[in-house]
Length: 495
Ligand SMILES: Cc1cc2nc3c(=O)[nH]c(=O)nc-3n(C[C@H](O)[C@H](O)[C@H](O)COP(=O)(O)OP(=O)(O)OC[C@H]3O[C@@H](n4cnc5c(N)ncnc54)[C@H](O)[C@@H]3O)c2cc1C
Image (cartoon, rainbow, N blue to C red):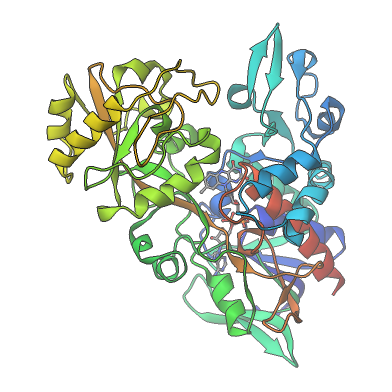
């Protein structure tokens, strides 16, 4: 390709397309290159539920974002508010004592304006009635601050963003993988890539924006940065996010930034495929996740519990417990339940492809726990049952019904596991995306280890570090891609 572009964007997910829309809006001649073929383009973005977290101060703020503001349910809906202070608190809860980073402040402060901007480009949303609201006095009442999802979820988000980008004159090519960055006179001015014929090509541009995801699908990088157990992690999304943007930027002395060992990972069915599968409906894909551990206990290969399953609501533990499971001997665990809680199971436990074993007695169940020290498992479960304290079980609140005297307590929702039939679900850890990445300036420019801008190089999306540390409030990943993508596109096009 001989043409010279104003802005070249690597990747075609949410962050890339937001950058592309922003650059085109500024009049830049813009090219997106995507490593995958057309069907697999859109990266992790397509695997999402399209849920996005942002600051809003009441129903009025949401109407301009909605696909169907005349939905008859709207007049009976209380969306509540999700204030900047609440967003701050939610992020701080995962920061392990760190102050909010400048990236986190930008995410919060620019979230609503960015949502409105994207809606102005035709990207519209539906309220998440099913998962984020409940009925109270004849009204739908939303909770938790996560209120809207893109129409038709992640695939819809990608389709709407791509349409907006192309309406503005943006170009996209598939099967083209960036391999390294081209530098002339100290400025990044293009990329080397492999095209669909397997040929090496150089593509020139005034600015390059890296938007090619984290390193969750690269087992070597997972082992290097997250830990030795991580070669075997299941990958919940695309196989293409192999850290290429990070590797290329590090060759130019870009700074590692954020928590490189941090990642979002959840307990998943041990027997799921190694990667996410876009060919099955989102609802089925989601069902490989297994996050009802708070209703029972988890045992590792040594027959021992290893986390406080009732430490907090599952919203605040599920993204960490995937990591805990993966770090157990053999990288697996069994989730053990009795029939008292079967009615409370999420749909994913009733999913046609869910793997589990069932037995009339706990002893029979334990005999079927493959790969587990069964004698120790029996001791652990007997000790657990004997340690259950008083109080009423109530899964809608942190009920304080805990074990007493165990070295590793279960702090809430601790009930005896004593009513047959009993079930055990085998799980492992599935990585969603990585948190560590590059340091970008306020203009989205990538910075080097001397805290200087690398001229002509920008980054956005998963590969921006410092946005998430030891966990993240659901729906913030896409908003981060939007905020930092819009910003990078704007400044790169002015370059
Ligand atoms: C199962 C699942 C559910 C999720 N649900 C949500 C949710 O509901 N809400 C939320 O906020 N977040 C969610 N997330 C997280 C969210 O997916 C990410 O935060 C977000 O999509 C990342 O966007 P991105 O544009 O940075 O990367 P991606 O969307 O992953 O795009 C990166 C693109 O770069 C391409 N690429 C990689 N290397 C190269 C290369 N060398 N050359 C060219 N192209 C390359 C990839 O093929 C890919 O298309 C979910 C993630 C998963 C896996």
